[in-house]
Length: 369
Image 1 (tube, one colour):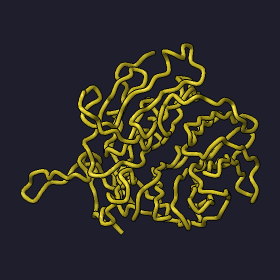
Image 2 (image 1 turned 180 degrees about the vertical axis):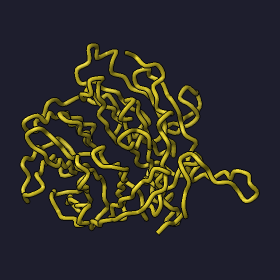
Image 3 (image 1 turned 120 degrees about the horizontal axis):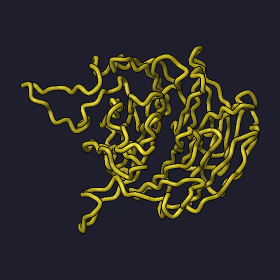
Image 4 (image 1 turned 90 degrees about the horizontal axis):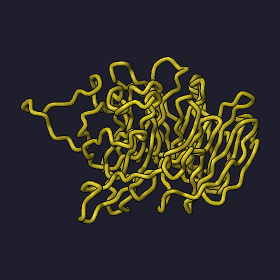
């Protein structure tokens, strides 16, 4: 089953024929390669929740499949199972107990994959591709939230063919995140809607976008009390906005920063500007990772407003990323995102998922107590 043989623990790299380290542009950071990656561009990654022993990673792809790997403590990955849709898989998430995986597809359906029985069944239906899927665990209900290009946000109890609730959005859903009791959805035409999920989901506030270009990814962050307090929003114009819901001083507390651009950010020469494809917050430190079409990942401390690290450049875009539940592992996917059109698509080029030890590199610069 293994394409690459066994890979050793985190952070070890391969050596060349004569013992010198090869310059390997597909894996310049010498991170662990996940065995048997998908056969087409990787749209999403998600690690299993803390309730599960061990670490399991799921990845969805444009090959219409979602795959599950076990990530062992030594960094080796074991492919466990996969399920198919009839169209590209655009998003995937776990239930809070780790027994089920939910997948959203261009085939206009969402499925519930029971990992114990390895059976998948349809649990949701839209009139357009489903771009975002999230599990909501509230004290008085639990459900799946799906956001679609049909301009609706629907909530499903997984047992009924009809949604518990359907909310109309002004435009197509491009990305979403949920940290109970908050959800945020970013739409086409730079729409931004915050929902509150207590008792039952309802629209809380529409926000004028802090960014001037198309929204690509969004991630909620928490305060020191572990409550959702704001979100990071990434656009196709190499920029991220940090936005608090109720900041003491909005003009000062909310800000944007440039990222995923060529030749630095303070140059007079023209810049190549790339899309921010995904944002993920570290579950312990609250620092964040961004990945982009430039083929780099970067780590940031939003409180100190500083960059912690930028990777070497991979030979293709990074399309997805996530941390495992304790923040020790950072997973990122390298595959073509079609940002340069079909003429840059090379079907011979492999897709990769890499695992990096993230325990140290994401520690904040100077802890603010």
